[in-house]
Amino acid sequence: MLRLHDDTPGLPSGEVPREAVYANLRFGDRAPADRPYVVVNMVATIDGKVVIGGPGTTRLIGSRTDHYLMTRIDGQCDAVLFGANLLREDDPRYPFHDEARRARRVARGVRPEPLWVGVTSRAAFPRVPRMFEGGAARTVLFAGSGIAPHDRATYGAATTLVVADGPEVSLPEMLRVLRDDFGVRSACCLGGPALNAGMLRAGLVDEVFCTIAPKVHNGQRGTTMFEGEPFPVDALPRFDLAAVHADDGEVYLRYRVRRAP
Ligand SMILES: NC(=O)c1ccc[n+]([C@@H]2O[C@H](COP(=O)([O-])OP(=O)(O)OC[C@H]3O[C@@H](n4cnc5c(N)ncnc54)[C@H](OP(=O)(O)O)[C@@H]3O)[C@@H](O)[C@H]2O)c1
Image 1 (cartoon, rainbow, N blue to C red):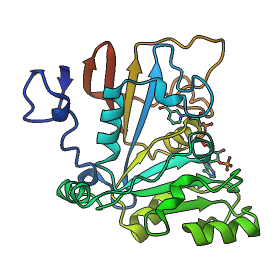
Image 2 (cartoon, rainbow, N blue to C red):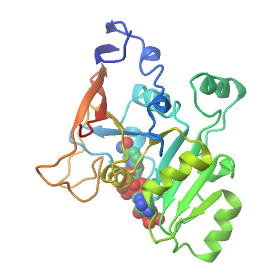
Image 3 (cartoon, rainbow, N blue to C red):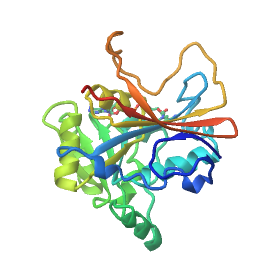
Image 4 (cartoon, rainbow, N blue to C red):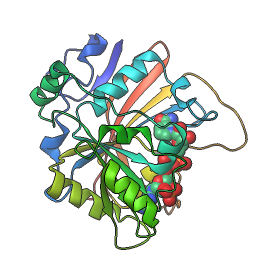
């Protein structure tokens, strides 16, 4: 893998093995007092599409190196955040960790096991998402107040259910609860684009990791990394490039959100 740029102090230049990339991220050390440090991690085609087909096809966008780096990034976070549509469509399974993996996480300064967090207004899932096989100690569902009584009972038993005061989940409040009640200092938001957009608009995103896969999906419409209300043209959020790596035509970008001085 060719390292083109990386502002991490002490890294050698030139070609580096993939194990050397994002080796010691320590996001939690940068966390503000009132919420976790939040990174978004997504993969897109050259034409910016992050959805290329039905359930399960998102994995076809990135290469094995992308999948490796993705696991490396969220593997160094206390928590992983999922929007409800991502749970409905891709329905990821909770990754139970063996002793060695738990020890590696602790050495990197994060919880022994990741806390997987779902966000929904009404929990209208066609079936209980598989992430909740992780149980109440490893998973949390933040839901709006419109969650139906039978879903309250179902998710109250399957996971740790946190019900908001209003129909939507206040994302700043969700992060405050994750920090104060669950001790989460770092969180990786895996999307999808609607959740990413809400997080960015609320000023809750610190970094964006974005893989550009050397592929084109085409089509006149399509879902991109952030799908929310557009920002004013003269007030677009700005980012500073922290790292760019490449492998076999695929590019791995790491951006930090530029904060107003
Ligand atoms: N290429 C990639 O890297 C990548 C990564 C992730 C996902 N994806 C793809 O993206 C698609 C899903 O993305 P999406 O934008 O449709 O949906 P999404 O962001 O996964 O989920 C949106 C839903 O999350 C819930 N939600 C978000 N913010 C909320 C809030 N503040 N309060 C309450 N609920 C909130 C709502 O759930 P309710 O519907 O329950 O109200 C909302 O409809 C999938 O096709 C997936 O494969 C691609």
